[in-house]
Amino acid sequence: MILYRPVGTAELELIEQSGYASFPPRLPDQPIFYPVLNEEYACEIAEKWNTRSADGKGYVTRFTVDDEYVRRHAVQTVGNRRHQELWIPAEELDTFNDHIIGPIEVIREFSRDERYLRYRDELLKAGFSEAKMRRGNFFLKTAEQTAFIIGLDSDGYGVSVLYGFAAIPNMGDETEKWFSDHGSDDTTCHVRSILYIHDGQTEAAVNETISRFYSQYKDCSKDEILTLKEEKQNAFLDRFACALKPLGFRKKRARWTRDLKNGTSLVFEAQKSMWSDQYYFNVIVRDAANVYKQHSIQRVARNGKDIYNWQLMTEEQIDGLIELILTQYIVPKITD
Image (spheres, one colour):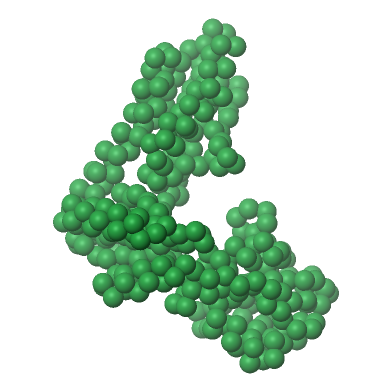
């Protein structure tokens, strides 16, 4: 079977030392070796994860392993269907290497934008820490239970800069270690925005905007950050209220209801994700007399996505989402 393995420069150098015949032993905190089953998934990891190392390089290796040996290990699917991998215990890696047929090939190479590497160095020199388990995510403690967050990413055309403030969760004695490991990202940072740098002009504008934002909120307490987030959230949901009220909808919390002519009710629901600060939007037709009797439920999807990182949406994107909901999900059901 042909397998793939995304690697960074350090691991690739050790593979080269073996004559491209084997993978190096795992580190003490790496109990599992993860080869993946398709090139697309390997490229995604190499580009988005391995390139966040200090040298900004990521590589995809391809190799063949004896079919009979591979069949001993169950295929693990993590995320969507193409995210398939094998989980090889670290103590079994020597045996795995013995079943590699032929050389390990390097088939793809990825590099981070030079600006990304420069920004990373500047953040570390300025006293930011990089989350151990979220490369590219940096934090600077501000008040006792808050941190200023910077998240860097690169897509080959420029660098995206997430910025905001996070209220640090109380994990007891493990709080410091947990936050050092995980930090905060684009779906958990409580008050956040995102900007893009494509050239020197946009770099100067982004620096000014982020510096002004930091100065404005750096002394805020955890409660003040959470209150600011709640205010932003209410303003976001009010956009939907303004669009739905003229159509006869009644609001209760994050749910809007309108009676239809056939003994049913039409419900629009903004459903908060259990795992992150994002929203799903559901359109439900239910029995007017029995709210537990649902006739249909649709989840609003746009461009293949059905979950919305609301704080990172532009005004135009929010307007476009509301228009989509009205024209494709709400109005047709009212006029049926």
